[in-house]
Figure 1 (cartoon, rainbow, N blue to C red):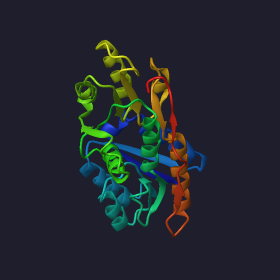
Figure 2: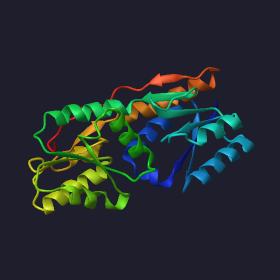
Figure 3: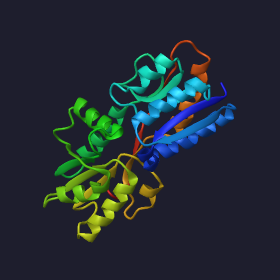
Length: 263
């Protein structure tokens, strides 16, 4: 194997978790003398056309997949093209293909356990819009775990996450969970501007840890998804899958919660 292809939809470039995984994936493949060929597209239709072009031109030997949706149309296409691939996939999604398998339910349990020790009040997950793969997976994991009655879910749009979170805060103490570090930091600042104390009045938790969470004031409690390890493991999975007729399954390390000042 000499080349691995990766297609990213443009909006995913703003996701810090994706960026960290991507960096380690590239380094892992480089160590195996495999080049990473990247394309950035605006939508799924463009992405599917890229795979067809890669197959017809022989530009890559395999494909890395991020952000699997339910009944993801990329998988049957790649299988019909006989273009090998390995995915970064939730435990609920893996079905007969090579993958690094993570478990969103483990992150849910980390948050539930932490929130169980918090003062009583509302708990709200301000999730991205319906159809966005990562928030959809997290909402589904909350529902499977039976956590959704205790953790309210509000679906938002990327540009309105902070305002939607502020609008949800009433007079009682509230715990707010957001997907991304940028939104979490902006939310802490917006709460302070409204005279809300963090974490005394409103606690803030982030589903993705980063340097931003570590450097914010107050520092933000976040789930460390082990992004660098996920990227390295996906690179290893791709290399191993190229030499194996059977699917290669690698279990991702468990995430862990970094408790800081915000919650």
